[in-house]
Amino acid sequence: MKDLQTPFNIDELWSLTDANFLPIAKKVAFYQSQNNPVYKQWISLSNQLVDSADTINAIPFLPISFFKNQDVYIGEKPATLFESSGTTQDVVSKHWVVDTDIYETSFLKCFELFYGSPKDYCIIGLLPSYLERQYSSLVYMVNKLIEVSEHSESGFYLNDFARLDILLKKLESQKIKTWFIGVSFALIDFSNAYNQQLMYTTVIETGGMKGRKEELTKEELHALLSNNLGVKSIHSEYGMTELLSQAYSLGDGLFKCPPWMKVLVGEQEDPTALKLVGRGILHIIDLANIYSCSFIATEDMGEVFEDGTFKVLGRADHSDRRGCSLLVI
Image (cartoon, rainbow, N blue to C red; front, top):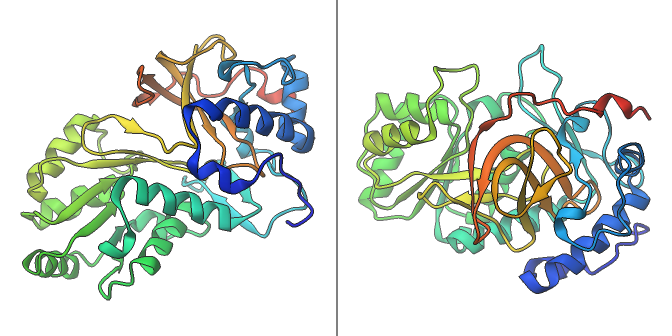
């Protein structure tokens, strides 16, 4: 860790502005193009340039599928590994994290930005599919939030819905602010079995319907959960194994990024044709991902608006990008 020279002070990230985002992003792109073997070879094979990237949308983005068959990191192989969810037949994404302190700072700063101090909440995680497997970055994040909250009732609740029902009613009766994050199918199962009338609880869904239940649109999911849980709106978290930062929607369907994260859109037929506003494939800049790759072309369709907020519209029809098979290290 100590011998990895970065092009800027990491602490600069947490107070970035629109004015200094591009200069830092360019430094990160050049640093990773020189020190990350996977990113470096992708740039070469796809005939893209970093030196001449004088705008955000000119920086090369690495297809997210590379995390399934390449080890994307800088320096010696890290000790910490995060893996995406999937069935036993799936090839899951692997994200080797060099510095977990940066990850923790990122998600704690992000939480404070959108919700305030974790110490002001009882933190509840309803993440059965994630708890049942190893190497989940989401479980790591929520576990740390639980620790920081220091509330005696904060914790994970696997399948004990009756106990969770009792706890939520107790917290509500005591008017305790609660941050309740859950995977979508578990929130549906719990709320169908135990209706609530939550006034002091913020409910955050983090996706996770694939292969579990009949797919619902985001609007249908939120309407069902709002009705069952007695809340006006459902918040959402947008994160992924390959990133170290998260965007949140505070109930309006629009995701907002922390200052060190930005979203662009690319055309499905030409992933290098990027724009700051419009519909297309979401491309994520996560500058906290300094020792991995900060520029990731996802497989999500979305829409980005003038103010930098964005919506997620679903998965791209052809999720494997052309050229991915070229990269063999």
